[in-house]
Length: 154
Image 1 (cartoon, helix red, strand yellow):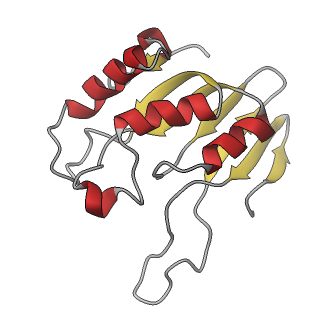
Image 2: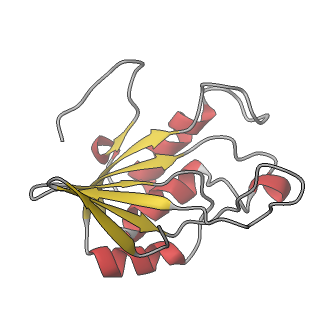
């Protein structure tokens, strides 16, 4: 799939949307394929999955084209050191801005605490995520950090 394309699987529509990253698995295949975020829609709900992404203006475009999302799953970890990671991973503050840009009613902070990839303190991402949701008037109740195995109703 290319960006802005959709496929239907039964009653679900999966959309391939842009994000800010790169692609490549080997020495000679850098950016030979697309990197992407994804929308998942049915007749009742719209969800957005960020994949690996940094912040970019493209999220405002997604918000305009898609109009809203009920829930977004956005990476909030592995962002230090910024001079190296700023082009591939969002900070918790940028994750909240992404949620606002794409017009997500609620967002789950993900991509943190599983494997230590970068030097930020282990529990810093969720703390900054929740604090930023409050500071930017997104609402702490709308910025979710799930416990291992926790489920929610959408």
